[in-house]
Image (cartoon, rainbow, N blue to C red; front, side, top):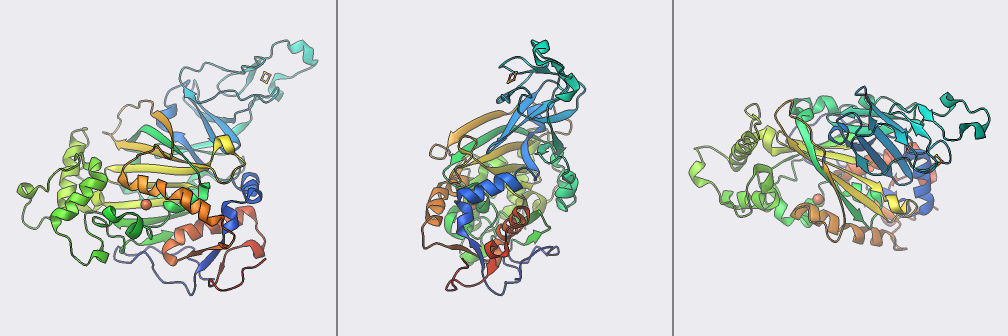
Length: 453
Ligand code: FES
Ligand SMILES: [Fe+2]
C-alpha cells in the first residue's frame, strides 16, 4: 500500500494531491460508530496520546485551575504556588469523587467536597478528617495521581501515560516548521465548544483535508487556492499550506480582483478588521499590488491597532494559511496574524456513545510580545445554535449527515484519496495505538471488492 508516511517537504507549487496512490484507501466505516471500537480507543489510545487540554491563559497565575475532560477521562490542571504547572487525575484518593469541575482562580488547596480529604497544589495529601478511623494511614501513600503536562506555544497538553515521550518529540517537525511565526505571542481570549452529533473522528476528518472546499465552501473557493495546497506528513503530525487572497484555479480566472476581495471580506474579513461589505480599496492600491498585497496591508494596520508590529511579515507570511494536524484530534491554522486551534473529542456527557462528539475552538489573537494574560471566556453551545462564521458553520452543519450515512448497512468503507492523506495518516496512527489485527486495518482497494470479514 502506498501511504504517504514521512513524505519530504514539498514546494509551494505542488498540488494537494501530490503523487497519486495506485488505488483508493479503504477505511472500515465501523470504526466511526461501533461502541466496541470506541471502547478500544478509550482503553488503548486516549490514555497514551498527548492531548490539547487548555491554554496557558487558562492557568496563568498560581491558584488557577482547569478541568480537562475527554470522554471518560478527567484531568485537573493546576498552576502551583511555585509557578509550576501540574496535572492530576481528577479523582479523590478516598472514594474517587471528582475534586474540581470547570475552571477558576484562587485555589489554595484541593479539598474533596465529599468527606474533606485535602491536598496542597503539588498533590501532597495534607488532611484526612477522622484519620484514626483508618488505622495506620500514611499520608505520603495517597498523593493525587499525577498526569504528564507540558506547554508549547501557549498551548497546554496532557498525557495520562507516565512513560509517554516528551511533547517536543511527539510534535516532530512542527515546532521548527512554524518557528518563524512566534506563536507564543498569541493569547487565547475565548474557547467555543460545539456539541455535535458525530464521532470525534468525523469532526477531525473535516479539518484534515481541503478536498471538500470546492463543494462545501463555494464562497471560500473564490479567495483560496485549494489546488496548490501542498501537504506534508511527519508521523503523528502533518501539514497543509493554502494561499489566500487568490481565487481557486478551478474558477479559471473568471473572477475580478474586486470579487476576490469581496469573498475574502465575506468569509474572513474579521481577520483584517474589515466589517461585512467593506469595499475593495481601489484608492489605496499601488501599481503592481495584488489582492493578497492589499489584504496583507490591511492586516498589518489592523495588527498595529493592537500594538502589534507586523513589519517583519511579507504578503506570503500574512496570507498563506499554514494548517498543522497533530494526532489524534488537534489542528491549528495560522499565519503571521492568525491562530485558530481546534480539537475534537468524545462527548463528556456521553462517553460511551460514539455518535456524539464535541468540537472545541480556541480563539487566539496576536498581542505585543510580553502582553499580559487574561482568563479566556469558555462557551459551550449545541451545533444547531453555533454560528462561528460562514465557513465553520458549513463545516459543522455537514457532520450529523456524514455520521448518519456512515451507519447505513451498505456503507462498509470510506474511500479516501491521496488528497485526504492527513485523514489516512490519522487512521494509520490509530491502528498502531489500537494494535488492530491486519483484517481490521485499512487497505488499498476498489469499491467493488468484497470487504474483509
Ligand atoms: S470521596 Fe473524597 S473525601 Fe471521600
Ligand atoms: Fe471546511
